[in-house]
Image 1 (cartoon, rainbow, N blue to C red):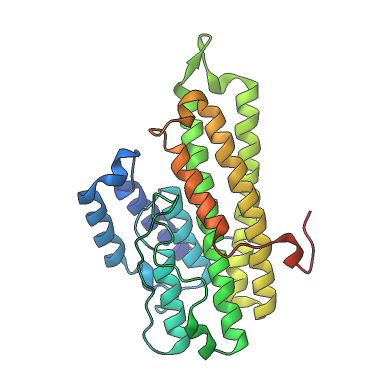
Image 2 (image 1 turned 135 degrees about the vertical axis):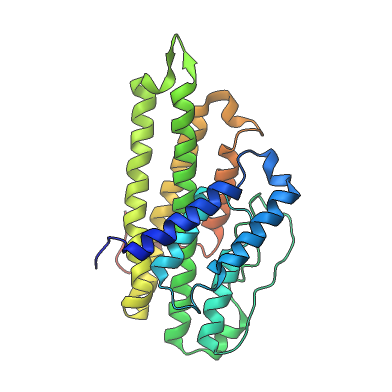
Length: 271
């Protein structure tokens, strides 16, 4: 396995990141900006990101987009539609996820339209079902990693400007160590995510599912810790509605509970 991204994959990352940076919410208030949401929906639809699998994209490439969208808190459906696209490709016929509107702790609608156990899976053989589930787990892992990256950046930028006792809080070792530990968790998450994303198409189906389960457990634990660190670095403001840190935390909680994995499910064990 070569963990390096190809030139085309780097370009895909840059395109997804640019879209997220341009049209993703820059504040909690932006979540209610109907005009921004309409422009974001139009842009995501026009890029073809939701039909990556039927266009021949790999699991790695789907994960790249999901990660960047989570980092930028892209708040239109992506995971549900891209998994529906993958299922349609496997079925050889059209199948689209519903887009239910319901209350959720996720303010970014990251998993809107996601169907965890579509009835149509019964029309596939066991290998195809396993590969679809491996992709589903992997995409939620990518969402976790992206959200962790986003909230870590938020905390780092805040630590650079927030002053206490005549110095920026980022200059204090206690804060710097917390942010460094969080970054180490993110780097570990990127490694297990990249392996799981590669495994979707390259390893036997059972091994791909196992890799995705390992990644889900690790990434969920790491992302929650990074979110908690971000809120702590922000201090009092981190517990307010106006701070974006809680939006990242909400997104992480929802991604964790979608296709949840328990430690005892693993055959290799993970401590």
